Image (cartoon, rainbow, N blue to C red; front, top):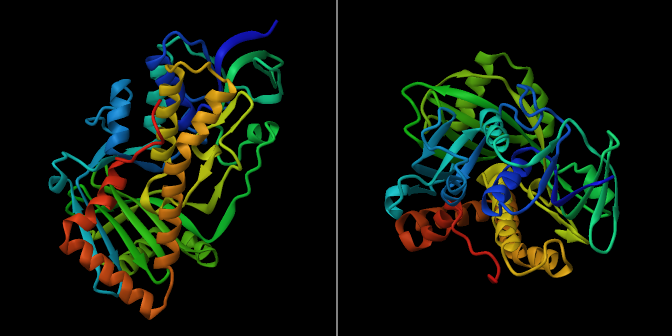
Length: 394
């Protein structure tokens, strides 16, 4: 006999766990299942690695409504100031939380302890976990989706939420196309210690070799995202720690302070892509399963959380869960925000990766003007804080 659920979430990483916890708190009447291939409690869960992510202020406020985030957590650090600059050119701009009467623009959290904390919260709810397990097949009926797991378990759900990442196998089973476009660059991710502390100051630095980001994190460290041509990544990964720190200091300069130590390094491919549709019969996509963006502006997880927020609104609306009107409304309302963020991040990368002197002068003038005029700075600040409009509310 198949187990019956209102919502079946495929994937228990950050997006899936946040979705399950949010639905459990905002719609306690629902029966919810999560299918996750890895044990979240282990130190080596592939979704909960050594990376850090940026939480926009709006994301923090949402997570606080479900007691899923504490700004005083040992794995969190506030972003109070952001400086955007173009190396070798005069233009730069700075955004300070005080200018917008905020205590912080956002927070940087370490993925591993944050992910495990989400699952500890989930354990205290009525959400049913199928873990470790994965989807073997999905068939769709008019009123529900029938899901067969690798273990042989059978689940029926009125709504399937696909949240198993950019390489989603479940998305393929649901016959939703996703064709990512790889960037010519990849990214090196690492934690960097800095002498004298980071003072809660984040940096977005564009160089002739690719964009770089330093995000303040716990214990006087930065979370580094260093983008460069794929051909150069191997050489930088093979440097010893001292040589890597020296190369980083040369490339970034001393705006962020003097770098003293680097932690474990990892490299990630960078892709741009979007599912052909965010919904199908009895199915919606959230997080990286629906959209993959460049990490330069730290918008990826925040975009996924806004997917979750809308889903919470819709399940408490008058629309029948999983119905055509429900899934269509989800895709319709999420379209504008996703398009805006994907266009913004991709345009930033392409504009600042161009070596044209004319474009460089235009970039510098734009950043300089933004720094002089607060009204020009406001749209960027609102985007960083996650203060964006969804589609038309019900």
